[in-house]
Length: 288
Image (cartoon, rainbow, N blue to C red; front, top):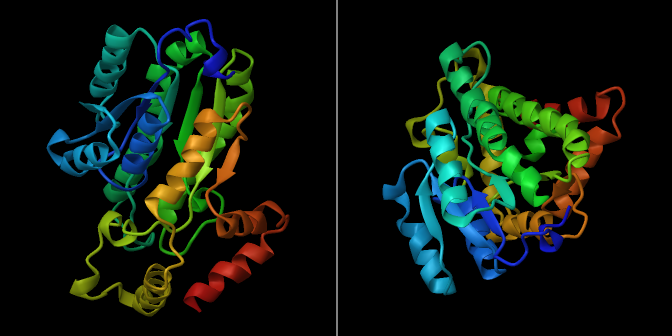
């Protein structure tokens, strides 16, 4: 399953990464290029690639920056077929593009919930489906950045966690099937990553909180979460990207890879929680 040993190893291994304008995607693109991967760094809006280009220049690496909107099947097809046309191979895909969302069922519009699923779940499937035949040809790797929120549901993250749960379930089900044809499937589960929470949830903290009867619980949840980012316990994007590189380069990568000891302990609570009581006690304390 290791592309290093594939029949096409005479040319550089090629990886396509989505959502590389910032955060984990940007850090993973630079790290992959530094490690010798021919890296196709994609993003929905290429006018937002300045930070990516700057990071690549500072690292002294070359990136092939292309447009890819995970919610647009035509855009996905164009990007994947372009990689094959230009390089003749695709050895790995890193599904990183995603969007946060903060809200709760009674207050959320159904269209907003569907949008969260479209980006975080169906977008992953769009890219994975388009790439799978090429990954079969290379004995390649399909890697998806999910979240600890794909294992443990978290207050006011219902839609986001539902999408991440769906991704984890899909990939966990796909992994043994893909393995029969030489494709390795992994999910990478970060916890809190510095700089991403406020930017990605689509919620204006400065505008105040008016969530009706849920305002008190939401305020407590936000205070607890912001404190996690301010006290230095949030991981850097570069740290999370190291787990992506583990999935890319390990001889036999695990299916599920957490990015920190905290993340391992957190998801371990769920995986050892047969009746669900431990998780409910944990997350209930965040809003009680």
